Structure formats: structure tokens, C-alpha cells
Length: 138
Length: 221
Image: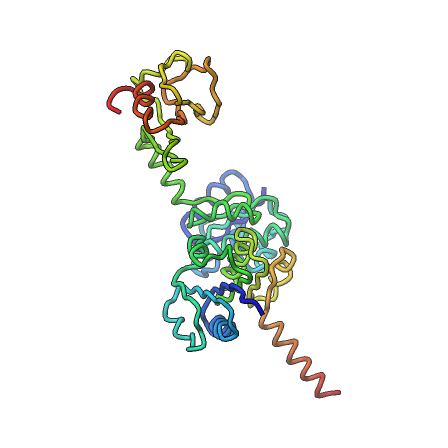
């Protein structure tokens, strides 16, 4: 597998887990967070770069060389930040594949229509819960 | 006209007061409970307490019938999402977003916001207008500095004022590429006459740059 260049915004539980795993799998990863202490979540598996800054500023995304990214993962703890920077990554920087985590299921459809791939944890969890319940019944 | 204003600051209050006085129907969406109470006591506007980037509260505020949504919250991302939801989910024809990072002006327009206003940008512009334009602005050096593009302003007393371009004694290989007069930009001919306050885009080379400036804006260059 050839190496991809991946920009991740938000180094909380999800962002750091993605960064650690992707880095371990040999991908080239840059992770951005405005809170420097979150980089403590990165383990020794992580061999990418960290950028301390606010990803809603274009300058920070430029610093991360977002225009060269193959994938962009917007996984900060704020839905509106994720929706904004995902659109910026896709439309301004032309990143081919952009994924955003959005907690609020009410906004999932509208952004899917705008061409952003939205991952909604509540919906995913609900799906798995219901599948498990259904499997138990069968 | 129905206007929805989203936010909690003083600007929200004064803007709403102004629009109410003009007879517009105003709805304010604010997250802040104390502000919501305060607004409803002081304004004849409908107040919705809730998150302005949540479709539920936009709907409650009557977004389907609104002519315009004005998002004045404290972060750029909240204002973007409020405007996009208003437009995409409720068909609001015009949206206005306050932005903090001036670079977001272009971004927001590309993302469908009708008008994005940066306070920093506006203040900067007003202050620069007060201070007056700098007389000479070096815009670009091309080919390792072998060609320069410079903007100059014709201040009172500049020798070029009142002249047609053909009357100017410009050195060889120097050119006035454009004349900016208020909002009009013209690519001039020999007959174009210059006036005070005109801004000129000059194309020069290092060896004739000084002589060109002297011919246009006078001695001391």
C-alpha cells in the first residue's frame, strides 16, 4: 500500500486514536489541536507531526499543507468547527476525501447533501445496539 | 420583512432596535437565558432561547418565512453553520455572517453565505482612509526585480495632475498601466487626463523607476 498524507484536526480520544493507528500503519499523519496538552494522547506508535493551532484559521490549514492531503478527518469536539473545516478542506483546499464527525444527527443529512461525509456517533451506536438486539432475538 | 438575528451581544440589541423602528418583524435567537429575558423586556421582537445553529430553533424562529438571517455569534464557525442551515434547510434567500478572521470572507462566500462582514477588515479600512493612502505602494517585483509594479496616488501639487498621458515626459520602458479613479479602473490611452487623487499603476524597471516617479508625483523621489 502506498503512503497517504492525512490531516487530522482534533487530538481528543477519537483524533488521537486515529492518528496513532494510521501512523502505526505507515501513513503520513499531521494532527492539529488548539490545546497543546492533547498531544499527550499520542503514543509511541505515532511518528507524524503535530501542529498547535486553531484549524478554523486558513493559515493553520496551510501550515499543515492541507492542499496536499489525500484524506482530511475533522474530529474536534465541536460540530460546527468540524462542519466548517471539512467544507474548507474540500472546497478551498480540494482534499479528495473528507470526513467529519458530527454529534447532532439533525444536521447529518443536510451536510451529506453538501457533499461532506458525516459520521454521527449516536447513529452508529444506535445501529450497533439495534443490530445486536436483533441478533439476540434471531 | 422578516429578519432573524442570532447572537447575544450589544450589536444584536441595537440592530434589532433599529429594524423594529423600521417596521421589520424581528426574531432573535440567543442561547443566553438572561439575554433572552432582557431582549424580550426591551424590544418588541420575538425571542427564541436556543442554539442558533440547531435546525430546531431556526424553525421555531420562523426561518421558513424569513427574508434574511443575520448571524452575529462569537465564533466564525457558528455563524457559518447558522447561515448554511438557514439557506439549505429553510430556503432563506439572504444570509449575513459576522466573521472574525478576515480571511474567512472569501471562504464564506464560496460556502454560500451572501455577505460576510469582518470587523477587523472594516475598522482597518476606515482607519486607513482616515490616515490617507500612502503615496507610493510597491505592489510587486517580477522577474527577480527586473520589472516593478507600483501604485502611486496623485496628491495635490503632483506635476502629472491636469496632464494627458502623452504630455508626460516618461522615460523609455515605463508605463502607466491603469488609472483608478474612485471605483472606476481604466487602462489609459495617450489622451487620458489625470486628476488629483487618481491612483496609478506604474510598470517600471529599476533604472527608470526614480525618473518615472519624478515625472508623475514630483521631486524628492
